[in-house]
Amino acid sequence: MRPVLGGEVEEREQRVGVLLQGRDGLRVLGSVLGGEPRNGVAGLRAGVGVHDLVERGLHARLEPLRELVEDVAELVEPMNRVDREARVVAESFDALSRDAVVHLESMYSRLGGLLCVGLSNAKAARDDLRQSCATVLTNAMKSLSGAFALLRTGWRLQPYLCLRSGMEAASVVIHLLQHPGDLKKLKSGRLDSPNTIKSAKTALPPIGRLYGLLSEEFVHVGKPFLYVQKGNVFEKSEWEMWQALASIANFGLMLYVITELLFYDLVSEHHCWARRGEAGYEQRWSDEMAEWRRAFVEIYKPHYRGDPVVG
Image (cartoon, rainbow, N blue to C red):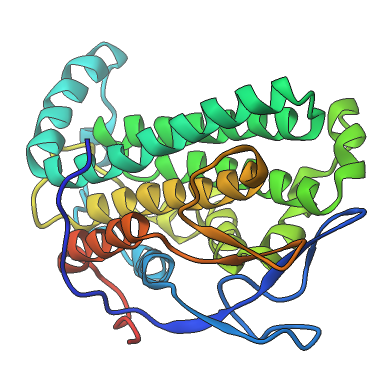
């Protein structure tokens, strides 16, 4: 189900680079979503309002949480109350986020369908690299599901741990596309997955920046851990809920972009990439994907907290 979306987008224009398919895998000639093109490749314009909105909002997320409770004992709940209270919190979440969840589900369904078709075609082609990468991406997709489930039941901080795990999985796939010979390391357990983020951020800079922020502040003990979080029901004015939900939706878009690149030659419909020359790819949004991105800004900007979005 895809809702009819609209609205104006306030986005930064940044340069898009090109990925070339060489003998040893994908070679990055310029950053896909930011920075100057490398090796003399002409830059192409692309709006990055979705990633920018999430990244800036996450920085604001490091401020004190709106709901603070002085009596810590109030937050130490018996475990047998967790399920009962989670249901009440979930009801408040569902009532407030209905449109945002429909929007997220449209991307989630599209991503699931692409993974299913791509994996089936990779198996038929006996493409071990893409089969393995698809398996990794299915687990990254489950990290997205886990983040959503935690948020829906009232956990404000923990969803980001799932997102960071999923981003690391996504970075492994980007790395393997550029260095297919490392598939043997992955299968033998010798691939240093955190180091693959270096490959990912050359292709998709937002992954590198968000991964670093989530690692420093949410996976490791950062500023959010200095404030008591109350597992109360959600309110419409609670920007923490909207920031987390925006981060989850943004990660869904990232996964789709990576999955389409992985299966570009194995699927007939493309929404994020176009072939450039015989062995290159450039980012190009279809009308449907551009509409989803416009809707993202329309849904989350009213709840945005952070530095102004640069137009």
